[in-house]
Image (cartoon, rainbow, N blue to C red; front, top):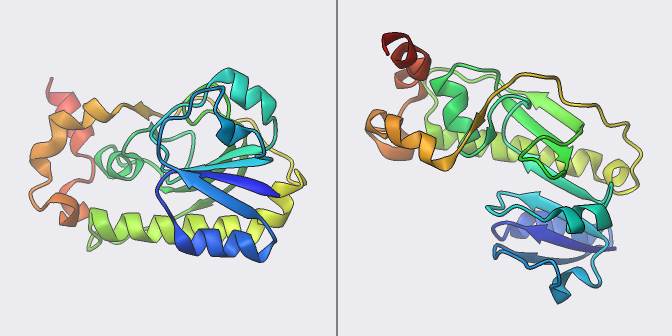
Length: 195
């Protein structure tokens, strides 16, 4: 199967997919609807991709386009899901879901809730979530590629954030991505109650 991996190059994930005989191409670039890249593709995996695929593309890849998102959807759709899970003290985890025209709103295939200690940093928590997400894909890839998993509609509620939403809280990232999560837990909730 010809797989298009959208997002940063992830050699270990490419190697895994190739063990199933998949031919993998990847790109981080925004792709126009009429791109030749889509011509021979049979399946799309989006993982850390910063662009939104057009409805025409998603219709063409119905049940053949998934996203790997490092949040426990419906919580923290959009940008910086790991950061927001601490700032708003929401459930944490990873989700693999079908792509749809919304942002992280597609039907859920598999999820795993994840716990962290206050000693974690944004960096270590991100790395842990990434490892769990990749292992989840590896575990379920045969069933995902053959559409053997019964998807579930996302529950209502949750949260959504844009990249610019982070600006109000960047002052809390005193050590950048090495900031301990204990310094962030619930800070967005606290600041909202003072407004």
